[in-house]
Length: 190
Image (cartoon, rainbow, N blue to C red; front, side, top):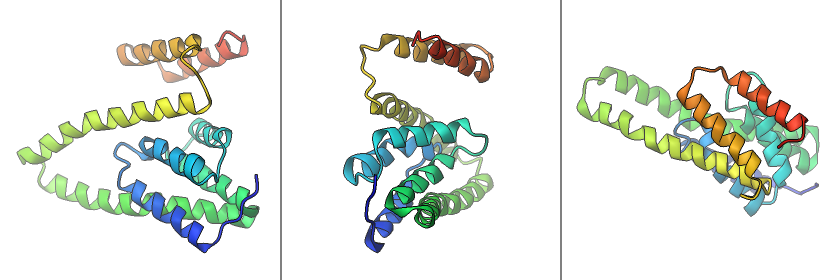
């Protein structure tokens, strides 16, 4: 895939990730559905497989959860012209996603710690939990359906449901579930 991106496109990419940064309650992964909408559906800078692979590779790699944003920017840059633009894409997306949220988190955490006994602060923290959960569910849905998975693919959905229940109700380490899912896929059962 080859595309032409001018300064206005790079600015648009930066501003979009800048705004997503302030919506990333619970981590950058919670904004993945909107990143998909912007990068794949609206702009066409990435394909569905590139998008899904970027998230899968970054999530499998050790390190912070936000690495998928760097890989998305890298792939946009590669599609726009090679290594120099890949580095630019990484810089643009990571700066956009990190700058506002890091600054706001630092200031809010400092203020929240100083005022942790206030009822409003405790209520805010408790009220954010359902929002984070809903954003994570939306992210999972986009990742599952973005690759054209259908509800007719019931084994995949069954594995996802069983894994969710096991994580929720037991203390089994996630690596065992990843290994089991990999074995099921290797055997061709899902």
